[in-house]
Image: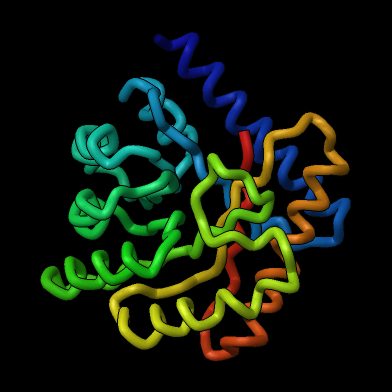
Length: 215
């Protein structure tokens, strides 16, 4: 296990350095970019190793899989992000155990979370999920066509008005999987333009976060 922990530590710091260098090359402040370590399918020992290397922001796709991990690592000061599609019947898990929800993809789910959070007296930072590639297999509001973005505004406004326990912090998207870096960048740029559009439409909301990871 000592060897595995050392490899995990080395990989973690290597990725942090790659992020730092990429930020500098693009003229960005590296401190504005944070790495979310996705722990889906990983054993507690591996997760503990990356936490002890310094990771403090962890992402999970499935609430039931996350709960024993959250309990086992309770002694660490961690921030847990729910990053996967959420069935409304499981909203109570996210409302109770997670610090962020990155995949808010419908008004119906927002209202379900609002009811649970209101009962618990909690507020939850969320990212709105958009489908920028128009893929039928992906969740999120369809946003591949900029000409249709105005049609998204009424539902988002309804969330803002009726769901005070949800704190919108930005947007999330999972662009189509591709090995072509230039094509991936086009989707990322598209998401940035969408974020800017929403920021103009709702200037009183924080749109600081853009989560654009991919496999």
